[in-house]
Image (tube, rainbow, N blue to C red):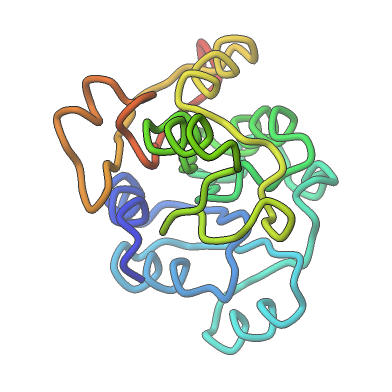
Amino acid sequence: MNRLDLNTVLDWVPTGSRVLDLGCGDGDFLARLRDERNVVGVGVDIDPENIVTAVSKGLDVIQEDINDGLHCFTTNRFDVVLLAHALQELTHPHIALARMVDIGEEAIVSFPNFGHWSCRLHLGIKGQMPMSRAMPLRWYDTPNIHFCTVRDFEALCLTLQIDIIERATISGLGQSALGSWLPNLFATSAIFRIRRANG
């Protein structure tokens, strides 16, 4: 569990809060939130094997496809809704974001930045979709279907009337001044805290 975006997410989740973890996988991070932040958490995942593993860790997990709209959750049911490195895998990410800030008082989203200079350079020189530590699969074998940049995400939030509370960036192996200063070009990943406008 060495993903740097998750360390930032952990810092942003208030102690004792009610958390919904979308795409929770095998529940490792939700268990970490429970143990380190004393959260009351619920996970959502589509993979039956992940569900079994998460439940074996004593977690409450629901099997559901995020793309279906998360209709089983009511408005303001959670303090925080998480979506870590899964936004780019969703069929309708804009619908998911709108639901997240409806279900939770705020949401935390992290995603790989496809506008990073190395992605641009790789595509420009080789003419092929890039592969990296953050994106290790080839274009035909990746779950990523909506490639997104930091600037794209910020524009989408504006369109959806979602306020950005805070932004953090990861540049390579950590945070850097360049990643904070020009995130669309130098951040390999971005993490956003968001909420409904005027919420």
